[in-house]
Image (cartoon, rainbow, N blue to C red; front, side):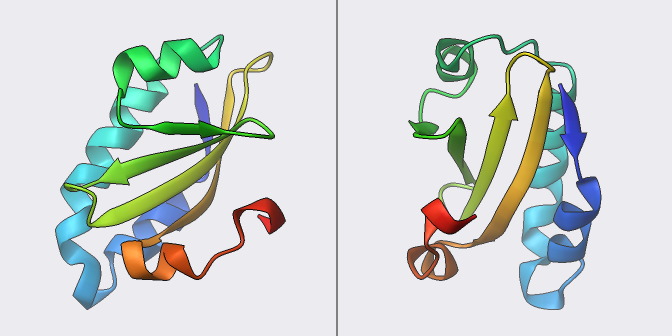
Length: 99
């Protein structure tokens, strides 16, 4: 998968209060970069706790569900777009449909 953009992840983990997210987000990025996801089922095989929702969006639990990562997948082009990364509390305030 080609991921757009790592910068969003980096800007999050560079914040002092979220530095513990760096290694889990880097691990997710590396695994996703090498993944071949053709269907939502492929994601669930690799990340069984991921939530596949409408409009090709997927929610990943990061660092023991301390953080949430929301992406949109274009399966045909093998593109993964980072839409949101934040704490579980921040995620609860986000309208996922508007991302």
